[in-house]
Length: 223
Image (cartoon, rainbow, N blue to C red):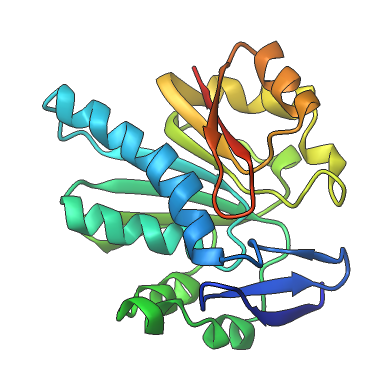
């Protein structure tokens, strides 16, 4: 797939998938969107549960769509900050080119080198990048992916239903629901009514939350 680098409103990059004519992140702010939906609503809710239970057990996260690596990057930073181990499993059917990854400005914005490490990590193996972050990324479509893990959180960051409707069906969520632990959550930017119905149909409880800039609401679905 052909991609083009795009600067979003908060100064962070996204990519435009020219084949599907969709952006990987919001043009109103890639960084603020990912922080709001996947870190604040997803990761930090699991972290809060860990702290209430006085548990130091690793947090397991599944991400649908590695893409630019932004969600993994932000999660790694949070894992280091909170000193809690995270095992992060991400899949991507069409990885971006290495030279495209080098152009993304997330490391520069947050004064880190983590993004570079994420994109240089080999595929198909679990690699410990630090005592607090293990990355396991696979080149595969979701439909064919199997895992033995159960997850505390699922970051559902597939392309929009208009571009990839097959990734938003009840059947897809039926596949994902058993992967979630009790009280685990699935967060996504898409709050369309039929998406909510599909999530409810597989036994998840829908929470509507205010969205990031220029988006009315987003979803956290809880098991």
